[in-house]
Amino acid sequence: MNKYIEQFRDSLKAEHDASPHTLKAYAEDLKEFSSFTEKKPQDIDNLDIRGFLASLHHRKLKKSSISRKLATIRSFFKYLHKEGYVKKNPAKLVSSLKIPKSLPRFLTIDETFALMEAAKGDTFQATRDKSILEFLYSSGLRVSELTMLNINDFDIKESLIRVKGKGKKERIIPIGAKAMDAIKNYLSERISLKKKSQALFLNNRGGRLTQRSIRRILIKYARMIALKGSLSPHVLRHTFSTHLLHGGA
Image (cartoon, rainbow, N blue to C red):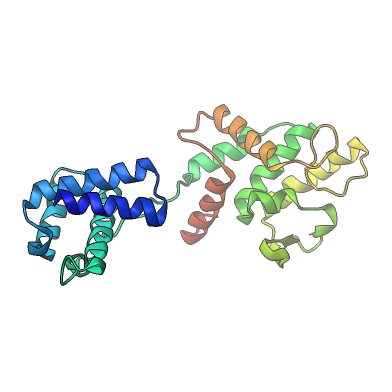
């Protein structure tokens, strides 16, 4: 088996310009497989490959690691079949492993309530932060969409807002009552800055808030309520969709 592994490595290096790290990883995976089967490539069938994968599973290797080793074996036998060293490719009969996707984190109702209550006060900064928290939660907007909002995007009378999304596509979304109240309070304080900017959310100098600034605001209030785990705009976005699904938003 070793001579075939070396030939396969040479092929990867010559034809695909594989890095030394990749070549080493492939070789180690194949030598491990060879030690398990103790067979020549011509005598290996799909049951041998499945048995090897099962042994990795019993060793409690991560599915991502097992999938990588299977990908190596597939590439190896594809090469052997192409070069005529084996009549059939046994790896073709082995199905890929399904790797479960981790569910995005979201806040509980109690955590959400505590977060919304954390921004208190009637100063410009407090009312701005309160409106950002309420708006992100009640609308499910992306942080990039939030930073691009302008005052004239709002229809305060109808509690609607025009949002420019990906590909410059526009959509109209309703604003929840709590978010609308928070935004009205913020706008009354925003006037005191006497800035000509059309941006809805401003920093203390009167410029448009950046995505980084909004992330910092979220981190600030997450720390204030000793929130377990990280808080990002994406977490609030997923919180919105999760609570909406369960009737809590």
